[in-house]
Image (cartoon, rainbow, N blue to C red; front, side, top):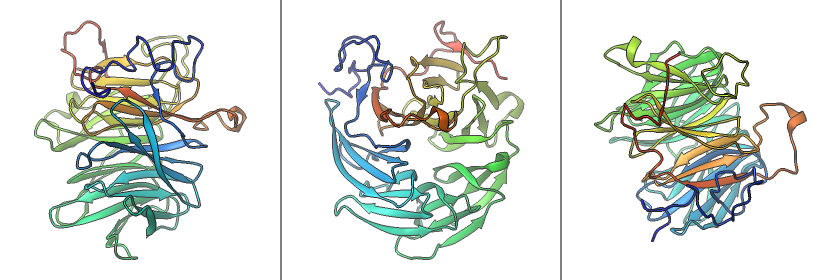
Length: 378
């Protein structure tokens, strides 16, 4: 039986590969540990596309490296290859055919890594660190989109040293997502830019931020016809906004909710409030995962406005998360994110990537379901 099949039971309680140590705070959910994780904080994770047989996971880190693991059906992970930048790696993505991986770094370059030959070559250059990188596959063109702290958004044909197009942004890019034909970039000073990518990329709309604090992560969601229709935006203030591009009733359809806070979210007592470090939508159910500096992951149903699950607390922040292409596996990384400054940095602490069976826990809930916790729009 495949461990990542729908009947799989790993990571959902019961006996675990790692025994049942109660004092183990680095992996309280008893999830599968990826072997040979990076030696510094993990910034980004990405699973291979459905065109590639099997599951391969890419992770980038502040140790300047990008690693690739094969995730076998029994849950074991096999390190396959690694490439280096000369600065921390901030983002990674795959080509649609699964033959290439693209990496973005603080060294102001992006590289294309050919997994078959294990060769990497520079394909992009900015005047500042590159914060995000995405592959765009349009009917009439394919390209790489890079967004940088130099306040530009650039589009690259991987065969040319010069960009096909460069668009000026009002501020530095903090996070971005692409689901063709839509791209969303969240910037410093709470800027929000939506681009349309048909024929050629162009700015579609600037949006007043629904959040009052610095943007940290963004993820596009789709409608029932599988078309991009809005995005979830996370901030450093333990809050996520669900925002539709063209909602029938903006005041009712768009909302924000609190998350990643100590002692619950609906309480009058003082709270510790943590950053939302990453958001990922489940590819089948359209539900979402959020991970935070509080060291927890949570699963949510935005349509029923319900929380499906929150993890036990890990002993480090969770810095990144992603789903594999069929939604059976959720990967998340545990690393220090410097949210409490250098005095809380412990170089002895290891970094981890965990794999959890996500087939059941992210199924949408009935709106009247009792065990979901309702999200009151705030």
